[in-house]
Amino acid sequence: MKIVIINYGAGNIQSIKFALKRLGMEAILSDNEAEIRTADKVIFPGVGEASSAMQKLKSSGLDKVIPTLKQPVLGICLGMQLLCNSSKEGNTKGLGVFDMDVIKFSNNVKVPQIGWNQISNLKSGLFEGISENEFMYLVHSYYAPLCKETIAISEYGIQYASALQKDNFYGVQFHPEKSSTAGEQILKNFINLKPNV
Image (tube, rainbow, N blue to C red; front, top):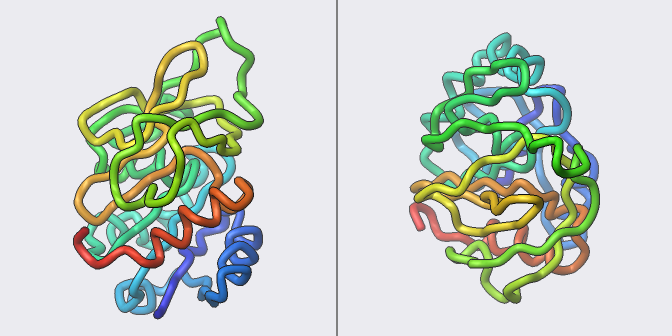
């Protein structure tokens, strides 16, 4: 099993590596197109600001590579948001995998949302063995609205998509690598997904 974590200088990479190691998995960090294309599973992490992260992807040509991948891909946090059409953060054009625009929480709630929140309406094999209303760890100021690709919902002032899926692409707004045993179960489920699930 070859797992590649896309390395573009905007990821919380070490904690993902450690979480996978606890599951008995070794992951390769890479920004090499051939290495990424030959992976069985690809993890696309992201922490930080959308427009500068997108610039890093463009400078290495990964903005062209990622949307064309055929194996299961998991976008985490900013990684999920960059898979959308655009983000209001820095008015950033995204990779266009998920057909929606990421917007900012209103001032009616404390921004950013930091801490544990529940996920519900779980759909997809990504959540095998995960209970409805399980708590996950989140840190974000922007969110993906509910849409047909939503596979989990969280509530913070409004309901929003805390996970998305389209074909072989999965995205989670929360950090599975920081979400205790339930988060590790989600990583394990992703690793165990059959291609084109």
